[in-house]
Length: 344
Figure 1 (spheres, one colour):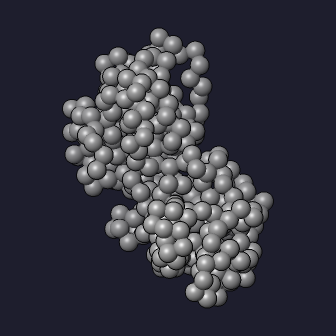
Figure 2 (tube, helix red, strand yellow):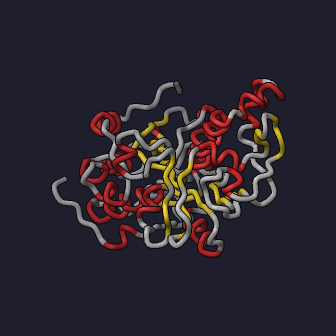
Figure 3 (cartoon, rainbow, N blue to C red):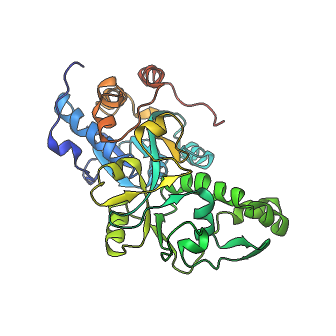
């Protein structure tokens, strides 16, 4: 396509109901709140530029979206699951049990996970070990494992302000939480020496699981809603730190102050270069059995990964997506309808 029309509403976040869409001609997607704004932009542009209805885009979290994808095949099930973490073997097994035997995995680009506080608050320079020592149930003090006694960020790291610890982190249904657990908590557990101590105390398997056990005294608060809920919590708790996607932060720089991680400022450039340590690919998963059945589904997924939309000069990049350097290969795979192979 040479010219793609956009309206201001294409930047709005939609969550339309899928009710009343049986025997439908409208594409239905659900899942990640991180992918939601990108999918919304594409859906509205698709509705404006093609002779198909605007797709329905719902949120609900990556895990919930993948579960809905795996409910079965047919017009009463969704066509696409948006996900900010990669599909799990347990998802694939559930899909297979319900007759969803071919899934197309589409990587749309990359996003960073950022740590931000109120715009008028203190500046922070974090490491994964800082976050582990702030939120973990057990930490190492004077060479021994103890219940986490830290009350302020200065207790965690003397170089930081003596500000009470309070963190709003994604709930367990969100793909962002999986990446937070792996690249922040687990990385911090290793770096702080806690993993070695936990394995020595509990054994290999239980010790590694214990790296992800969080304190339950109100310092760490799971947010099951989207990033707007996290932002409102910070507005009401000015000393709190929240976990956000880069694109959400970039669209709220008038309200949030972002922290560095391992000395690197999160940005499109630092994520594209690989310098920023807490980044992840974003995906959507397509039920191949619905291609050729749901009108416009093939055209929609082709459009989503087109240069016009997902390229470095497209509207998704303008909103904050880091364009995939292997986008051309993704475009060819989508055009061919190639299903994913076994997880590696």
